[in-house]
Length: 308
Image (tube, rainbow, N blue to C red):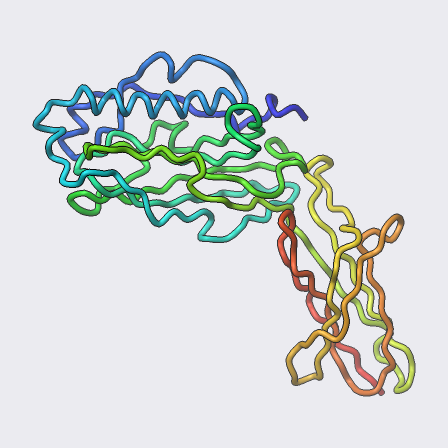
């Protein structure tokens, strides 16, 4: 699927609101609705263009503000802190369900906020290697993402809805960056295309089956597992090959501990792992996968065997 055919990743538009009305409450996020914020390319490049246009509009609103308003800033610099994505965790996306990603940050340094927004993007760089650029739901709906929580402090939250059926291909798994700007009436502003790195991953699943059960003492127990992950190209799960999984064991009342590590199969046995043990006492078994930069960790539900 072409990146230019993706439905939601490239959404976003600007609204024209009066700066003076919003400034009365300390928020001038309406900006100056310049035509540049609406026109231009489509796809990731178009979303980037709209984000940059919004930042330019915020700078223009600041420059056009009355001097008395501009002088209200109490700090020399605008600062951004406390950036978190998905609560500080990577996000595992499956094959069907829409995933909501939340980005939070704090803006300090001025009593009037003219504009701020965060975008998620993937690629080698924004100019020549841009693959994805996600504008927030708040940007697209012309919704103010921030709440003033002090004289010069603003708490901001934006959300992004990702539907793997429309928005993702396997190439999108891995590292993403946060592009964030913030413009207040302080002297300097923030415009950082590499504010944070975050990982979007193909959801994984893993099972374990220990058989036969019950089993006679001294007989062989076979512990079979299969590691799979979401395929965003086919919208199905497929075996994850040549990945290290750990076989863990415990007594009926003990805690799991790793007893051996193995590589998952390929071909017709893609993602499959199979080990044997001699039945001695009642025991539980499970496989565990530590994860990669493109796939989150997962631990299978244990399977206990009654030895008679």
